[in-house]
Structure formats: structure tokens, C-alpha cells
Image 1 (cartoon, rainbow, N blue to C red):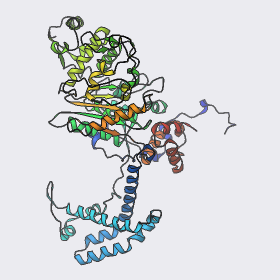
Image 2 (tube, one colour; image 1 turned 90 degrees about the horizontal axis):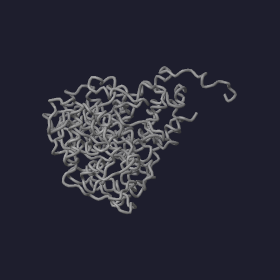
Image 3 (tube, helix red, strand yellow; image 1 turned 135 degrees about the vertical axis):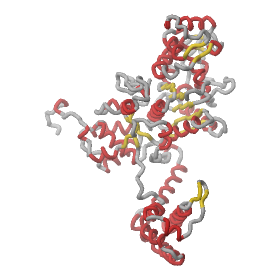
Image 4 (cartoon, rainbow, N blue to C red; image 1 turned 60 degrees about the vertical axis):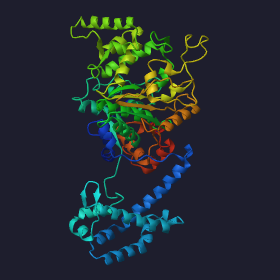
Length: 593
């Protein structure tokens, strides 16, 4: 084909009909676009693979491989004895059953050897098979005992006659299928942010029903396309896809785990807060996991403060100045204006019913600044009599902060303080590139160090301080001397703090390891533990479904290959090998012809 004179203009236009039937039927998209946190925490999703042995966890990997071998043998055993078990369940005499079970043990090794010729070469194959048959029979017996429940949590022994007379054939099939061989397989499910904007328009605000100029749905605002590959490069797939009507994120077990922690803390009569750290290797999907949680939280009615670009925030704050009201702390007025604008655009209507009193504002603003805030509010509302003289709604406070550099930091801190101490709506904070906040500093001031040689830790900056204190991580090694200066309980009353580590930024591995170690240490505390969720590489089933999705949405060389890649097991295995099961390398590999 290298002699062809065809150009790009000669290529046919992409359309959804170019995808194969297999790919279209295999890709499952959540009904409703984006699930709520409750729905997400209950979804059946494929399990993650074990940690890679090359990442310093060979013992965990070896344990998983042994479990995998046992599971394969149990599955082969169940398939081999399926018909015999059904006949045993129909027998009425105990002696007949015992004789039949003895026959199973005598012939099971040869039957399994035919089904698993590779595993049959294991030196302890016979012992493993015999132990596996015992396990399968015990699991069937346990299910039989659970059939005749008197009440919830009370299980009685089920007699042979009850199993024979009361159980229908379909129930006997369920009893025998202990390895879920004949059940519906668990497959990956995608959330579709674009579909959610349309299908949930009656519950979502008008802002969340739209997308920005680059086509990124506002459900993950302020996540955006960046000129330097963006945050985690997650939105690159959406840019490269031919189908611009869908914006999908694969829901994985790690996202489900995060949702479970949030639901456990925020649901029920005892409202509380969760702290979660998302870790994993570069390109494995941490940014996608965080974005999925942000979208799900917003669909669930949470107020979400989302900071997808921690590396930019810790370096490019324009200028730093001493706080006018809080001694020893410093402001980033331009970044505070940006934060006010983002929170107002995303959740202005959600916070309009909440108010900040003058007493609360005095913690963050001087009396003169508070007078200016109320004066600006009155000017904007033309002296509306309904406006209280001693308090101001949070949406108006955000509007004032977004229009004034001198008031932005105090206004934003006051709003955050109200949100973290209220129980009207759950408040979720999501921070990507969180390890960047513990790297070498970039902000200094003569009021902090007269020589201006020492960089200040970011918990000295007012707009970052409440979030860093809420997470409560103070590692032994960091780029700056960050110490715990919090007073009392700094975690919000109702909500969650979700942070993710980035391996794509120039942060010392020593700092990352110390930060994760401090989080794992707090995981053992009884009150408000820090849950560490590890996002691992894609398992083979997830890689297969990602390729199906690439074909359906028209990404890279799968756009016109009509199944030559996604339906070819050798091609799929090759792509899984060259990518290492990581999202970014897999996308790169699919770009090559």
C-alpha cells in the first residue's frame, strides 16, 4: 500500500456502523450515564490483578498465583462432576450418596487432567485435585444448609428429603454452581459523562448538563485539556475519539472501593467523613478514578471542590502576600479568585441556602474587609431588604471573592469553613497530584524568612491549609518543613477528602514513599482512618473491553480496522504485553498503524 496515492481526504468518514457486532454487544455502559456513589459501591466489577512482582511485592504475587491455580482446579472439578452432583442431590438414601461420592474421588484426577493438561504437570497435582474436590463438596453442602432459613441470620440443618422434595431443578443447579461457572460473567462497565448530562438533566444543574469549549463535560469541571498533555492525559482519549457524543470512563474495582469508603462514612444516621488516598504506578488510571468519583459525587448531590492540577497550584500562584488577618499565614490572591470562580460556577446554586455570619468571617477577614463585603453585596442587590445585616449567603460571598484580589482569600476560606462544618449537604474535596504539595517549595516571602531563601510549606498558605489539615498527613521526609499546626478536629463534619498521588511529576520518590507510609500508618487508627486504595494495572478482561470501546468510539487504528485488532487474540495479547496493562501506553500503542 506504500505506492498508493490516496490521501487523508480520500478516507471514508467514520460512523458507528463500522464497529463490529461483537464490540457493540460487549461494551456495557451504565444506564443513566453516571451512577450515584451508592450505585457505584454496589456494582459487580472484575477484580484487580495482584501487584506486579517487579514492583517489590513478590510474596503477594506468589500468593495470588497459588490462589489462581486453586480456583482454576476448582472450576475444572465443578465442570467435571456437575452431572454427578445433580444425580447425588436427587438420591434419597445416604449409602447411595456415599458410594457415589467415593466414585468421584476415584476418577476425578483423570477428568481434571483432561481439562487442565498444563496444571496436570504440577508435582502435587493429585493432592491439589483431591483437596479441591473436598472444597467444592463442602461449598455445595454449605449452600444446602443455607437453603432452609427460618429467619435472617438463622440457618438450620437441611435434611436430604427437604433437598429432594423442596428444591426445583433450577435451585439444584444453583446449589451445584459454587464457582459461578454458569452464572452471568462479571464484565467491566463504563460510565458516560455525556449521557449523564442528557439523561439526568432533570436532577443536574444546567451547568453540569453542558461541556466546555474543548468538549470536556462540566461534571468533572475544572478538569480540562492542557497544552502540555494535561492532567494525567486522561482527556486525551476523548480528544482522539471519532465519536464526540460520548465521554466514557471505565469503572474499576479501585473506583468502587473509594465509593464504598465514602458511602460508609456519609450514609446512615451517623454522618461522618472519609479520608482516602489513591496510589498506583504512572499511567495506571488514578486521574480517571478521581474524575469518576467527582462525577459520581456530583450526581449524588455532593458539593465538590476539585483540584486536578496540584503541580500548577504549588508553583504558579502569581504572587504571595502575608495574610492581613491571620498572623504567620500567607495568601495567594489570584489562585483564591480562581477557586472562588470555579466553586461558584459549579455549585453556586447548591450553596445559596447556606450563610456565613460576621462572627465566622472574622476568623478570616478584618472588620474593614467585612464591611467592604457587605457593602458590595448591597450594591449588587440594590439594597434588597431581604438581605440580612449580620450574615451573607455563600454564593454571594463567592461572587465577591471572584471579583476582588484583596478579598478573595478571606472569602474563599470563609466559604470552605462553612462547608466543612455543616451537615446540610455532603462536602467532598478531591485533590489530584497531592504529592506535589509535599515537594520542594516555590513560594517565599520576607515575612516568612528575611533572607527569602527558605520556601514555606503549603499549610502556611490559607487556601491550602484547611485541606492539608483535613487529610492530616505529616510525613517524616518532605521538600519543606511541614508540621502539624492544626487545632482540634480539622476533618469536615459530613463528606470526604479524596487525594491521588501522581508519578508523572518531578517529585522525589523518597517524598512519595514517606507520604504513602504516613497514610498507611493512619489507616490503623480507629477514628477517621486514612484508607489507601491501590489502582493496579488492567487485567486481561479490562484490556479486552478497552479495545472494544476504542473500536466503538473510533480511537486510533481501531477506527477503521473492523475488528482486526479487538477480535484477534494475538493482537490483544501483544497490546497487553507492550503496554504492561497500563492505560497511557495502551492508548499510545493503539495509535500506531
